[in-house]
Length: 416
Image (cartoon, rainbow, N blue to C red; front, side, top):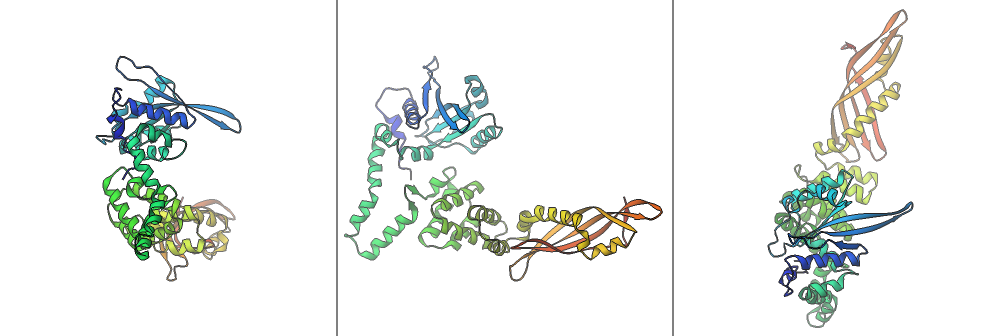
């Protein structure tokens, strides 16, 4: 559950226009974070525009980023902010000569709005950022902004003060309950908390309730029961958005790296072909950089389709490069070379790559069909190009990619 209740802003007895207390809070946050806040005066429509000017210093000089800040206070309704609520973002940035768009809201942004803002940022001309209720809570509960909670959200501040004294409260409980029970209570708190970070479904992925419930069940299995296999089954088989799954791995890895590694391994080994095993494998390799031997052993648990997605492009490129530069290393080249007084390999094409782990899971074997183009030259005739069908086999192990051999059917050729 959220610690801060932003409903307090609109419950204030101050006679301010709706949402203006929230705008004031955002302005003060900007000031505390070293941004230069400014806003236009209220116009005929009672609206006004808030801007932050961010100063960025680099090795080659100083730049300024002017942010147009859109404040949306939907604390009571908890309605998500949609594309219609923010209007034509790019047009507004052009109109106000701003470099970036910052949405600050007491609820969350819809998936459509997130996609819109991400798309604008990816184009490179403008920056976009969202401070939803969870990000605002993270900002406000850290220095230098904690005093703003007391000023704008006094009831929430009292609740936060009680929550921040949990370590002292736990210490007091240690003399009030049996030691075994106290240790269980303490273990639950320690499992979900790391410093000022709490691992919960709503904090990891606040955008969709089904994903939140799935994440909470997986966290309970992993953090309370130390059961990575059960957590993996929950994340692999229950309802959860793909982005929520990725956010869960990232959050756990940031504060519980050992358990995150166990979880990734368990997801890969879960054996659900329709599940996120490949994503868990890629996250595990990128985040924790395991030894090549472990990568191969773990990859051996992936489905054939996942192995193809994982390795096909790299192996295809390797086969083409290897056969183009070193064809004489392989026995089939003798057959091709015997077809003319001078044989030169011009090109090769790989088709239908298939991957299978060996029995010991020490390597990933592959096979594919080939089409080989060669130039055949004879002493008194012009050279001609011919293609021959064939096949190739090889494997991937901890040391790299290797071709075992390739074969050609010299009895079936097509002149190029």
